[in-house]
Length: 156
Image 1 (spheres, helix red, strand yellow):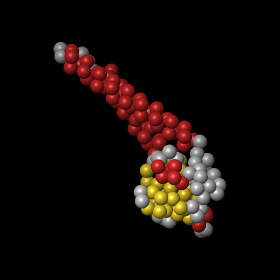
Image 2 (spheres, helix red, strand yellow):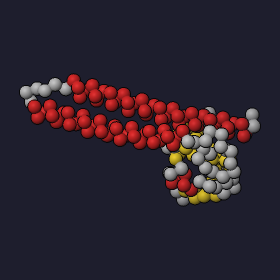
Image 3 (spheres, helix red, strand yellow):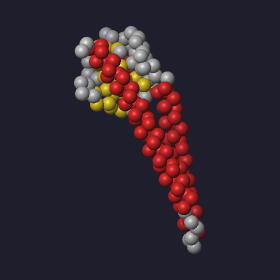
Image 4 (cartoon, one colour):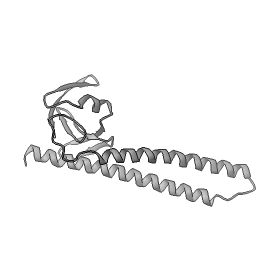
């Protein structure tokens, strides 16, 4: 298999990893919200009225926090839906698989490390420090990150 074909497969797998990452988090948050709503409705008033109100307030605060996480995740999901899956450009942009002499990055969303058999891919957002450094660069460009010089050897 040619290097280009294997990079295309790696890029597709990285995109699928990002989709799975978002869907997993979405499911977890939605399930937690349902659990809290169940706890909120099943909370019955006891003789310790203040304790009951405190419990309800804590559940409500947790629900608001989850609502904020859900809103952030929906923004991430929107960004991911805009990532071009078949981007083929000489410079790094959204949807690029960037191969350096040390690491491989997929520019989409911050989803962490995707471990593939040939190589690990770090799925990062264009807004991350390294994403900002590589954005617009091309094969042969060198950049410095954390005191280490990295060379871009491939952009898919």
